Amino acid sequence: MVFRFLKKVIKYYVDKLIHWLRMQKFNLELDNEIKKFQDSYWKEVAKEKPKIIEKGNFGEDGWSISIGEVNDGDTKI
Image 1: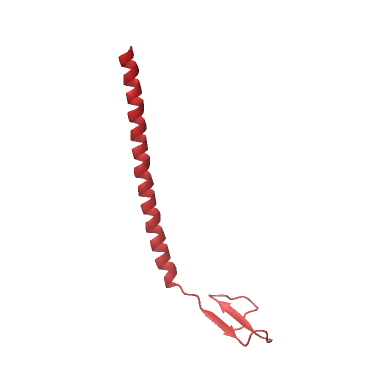
Image 2: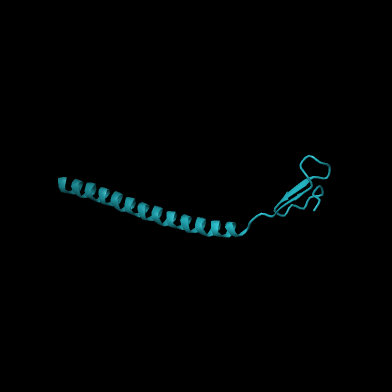
């Protein structure tokens, strides 16, 4: 009877240890995937520099500024 109890307790803690190890492995793999994604994303974003176009002087009539590909009706290029 005591032997069965000890066997169940040992099995329980071994299962807990295996579960913890699997979760640690999963977390490491997830962190690596996130890092790879972020690195590739920032490499792509760094290629795309916004184009800034300023017409006229600030405060004057007809002054406008465009950043990137702004194509609204108020922008004069």
